[in-house]
Image (cartoon, rainbow, N blue to C red):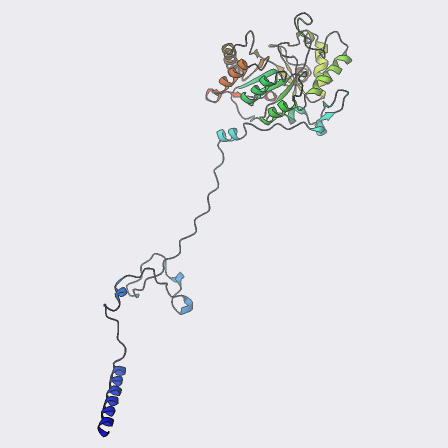
Amino acid sequence: MRLLALFWAVVLLGLAGGAGVLQWLGPPDAAPAAMAPQAAEPPSAPIAAPTAASGGPSAASVPPNQPEPPSAPATPVAQPLPAAPPLAPEPPPLGAAQARLVTSDPVIAPPDPALLEPSRHGPVPRLGPEGRSAIRTYARPFDREDRRPRVGIIINNMGLFAQHSEEAIRRLPSGVTLAFSPYGLRQEPLLERARARGMELLIALPLEPQGYGAQADPGERALLTSLTVGENLDRLDWSVSRIQGAVGAIGGLGGMRGERFAANAELLGIVQANLTRRGLLYIDPRPGAPQPARAFGRSVDLLLDEPSAVRVEVERRLTELEEMAKRQGSALGLANDPVPSVVAAIAAWSAGLESRGVVVAPVTVLIRRPAEQAAQR
């Protein structure tokens, strides 16, 4: 028993001595490479730099992307976060050509009740508050600084044959002016489509033509030299009540150009004065006719579908009209009817106008002061 107790006493003394030696030597400096294989690999992510809160230098004190001075410890410095992408720049302003494209089809305003007054035939145009007129209210916007030669085109007798009228509204340049017959039925859908395309509207007046009775019939509501002034003005009211939102009237219907009525200067002057009082312009459909005496307007320069409405002939007349505009600054052409050959010719001719330096202009851009008023200035 004594020997066994002595054995265990020696063992305990040995263990205590070994522990004391280990404590005196302290912990190892680093693990052997075989025990820590990751120590030989670079870190997969940068180590964050010490912050001011932890007692180290602040991130702001270290310039980004600058190397550490040689004396600094080789601790990786955190890379700054990427800057937020700048806001997208404002789009550049539209160029002149783009601006013309954007405003190429402005919508014409619908009929304004303030520019109408009652009559026994229905609402008729009148001057509105502060002198507002149909000429201004229903005019197609146009760049008055555009100095290119201006070609105006009027298509008469719209609204009598719906299919031809719809095709004309769809295919013609929107600067073309449309003259609607007062005899047309249920024309409002056509008028709305024309306004939506920005096309100016005229009222075709059935004035007594040359050859009235035998060769030409302007209809039962025609203005005639055989009627009194009161009867003619009543018939004029009927005509202008049929088409709302027009900028004015043209003194002829289709191929009838009111020659016999217009030969009576006093009667024609009364009609023009009545239109002026209502804020409407007047277009004389007779080529070469004098400037309207008592109304804002002008006469046409060329008939596009006479003597023939064959397409090749209409194209020839359009070329003549274009050359006239280049010589004198502007020219106004008239087509009697919206037949397919005329519409096709105008559509094809207008396709290359930009390259030829010519612009299609609405009729309100081409009008002049009444001749009587101009003579007084």
